[in-house]
Length: 482
Image 1: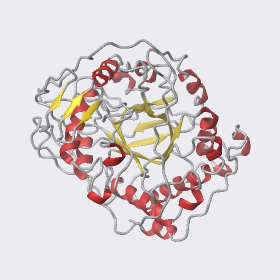
Image 2 (image 1 turned 180 degrees about the horizontal axis):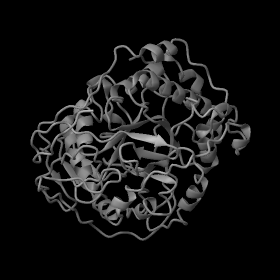
Image 3 (image 1 turned 90 degrees about the vertical axis):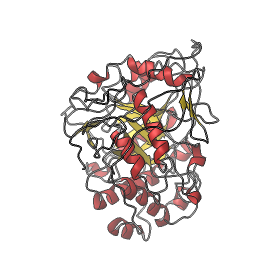
Image 4 (image 1 turned 90 degrees about the horizontal axis):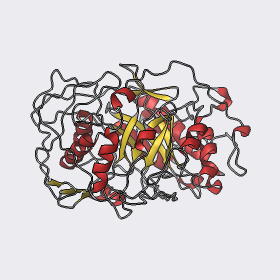
């Protein structure tokens, strides 16, 4: 880990600082240096949507340092400590972007799949898409991101199980991919990096998916196919809802005995609009933090589905939307210094043994015999991908944002820049750059530069309604080698 001896003036040259890598201990993410549990204050980050991933033109969401600097500064001001990135090209260099988010005190959750053919499991026929070429691509993603200390974890799948029909065939293959990824990490990374699954919040299959992935085959708690974390994309809290009306209370009851960290990999219903984000106080309140480890707001950049907080224009300028300021103000209602300073529990969790009786829904797969590693894949697991992507934290000479950014009233923000935080400090909602190490209070901010606080714009609707939200990516099968 590269260390920073002192924090210097905003925008000036600095040695590379690093957040502390997180570990999984039972049902919590834990800062290994402080022993504090960690709550994800996350943001889905996929600039340009699916089109933002364009390997043929050397483009993905973490390939442009200037854009990452712009967005990291805005998300740092907002209070984000984690980004989720869906589609990435392992052959591109991500050092600058990873280093910028690292300096801003933000972790990265990385999906290993993409929408392109041959780069994900086919939920309709997973056996057709589970082969060495596909796995080679997922391992290359691991290689590209394993050395960044702010890589929090990898998702082996996103909403691949969305019904009892897909639940009948897909689970063993997702679990096999998890096994293969974890074995690759064990052989080629210098630390254990969590691997888990991002589920659709479809109540017919949610509990069975969770049980299928968290249990230990033959009671072996070291079982490499067992997920290290479980997340769900949930849009059940809409408008001025409540803990009970949204069904959040049912989710807390469901996951009460989880043996792995559980969190929202997407949340933020956009009906009614503008959004009010009243779920924030519940997600980071006493009703949930003992079971859930926070969540990821969907999403940063505006797309056709109207979930964005910011319009990111082709010329690099940004127009912040009213939802950005609303979310910022909801975060300010939470005492995150207390939320992030809770010592991790040392109580041993109970890991269920994989048995058919764990599965409740008739038709969901209750067989825990996994497919064998495909021909040729074990050699890659043992010896590594070739060519092998390499990632490392680098020095950033200037954190100043050069793009024009306007708030929801059309006012241009001045002095926008990433504020590099001290070593082992993660970002926190509040004044940008103040930071909170995972449990040890405020970090220093020696820049002397105040970050903009944006007032919400427009009226807020009080209507509340529950809508189905299936915003996960649809993946098809094919063949592709790195």
